[in-house]
Image (tube, rainbow, N blue to C red; front, side, top):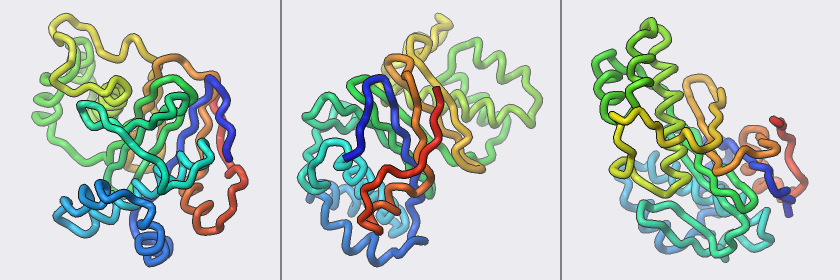
Length: 240
């Protein structure tokens, strides 16, 4: 088991594509998923997207099993109104996000967490402005407008991932955002942090309280543990 101290948040970053032993990964390990998860996987139109979803769920179940001391296949999820997964074991809080080839997983002791990762794609200035007007508070819109074009994309994705992570922490949706004209941002009452997780990706974390430590495990640490059957604590970077 992996020990999770109160006040700490663990972050796992995993690549979801077939580069590391795809037959072992997708065929042999996917048996730990529930029938509901396979049904959700089957709804994806493209095989690549199905594989990424299956990989993300296998990794999520495997990660959580390291903390709770149960087999991955025995974990039972319930879902909130907006689809946020939960375990009956309320002391372990978690959240997951994936975009393109990258999946990120946050685990916390007791405190609610939300995490979001986005693959950064180019957007025209008009598109940035339109999305920002719909979802960002007015002071962020003003800041975006005043930035040089080379900085607009990074600023946009930073604020977008913070917004998504906060909504996921709350288990709420975009229709529950506060009145943007009031100038209040939904994440002003939470701890938020943005990470340079990988070139062309942006990741943000939201927590109900400021953590004592954030532990980032090396990329693909969970996949390595599964394939090696080694449950020793993987190498990690620590942020105080």
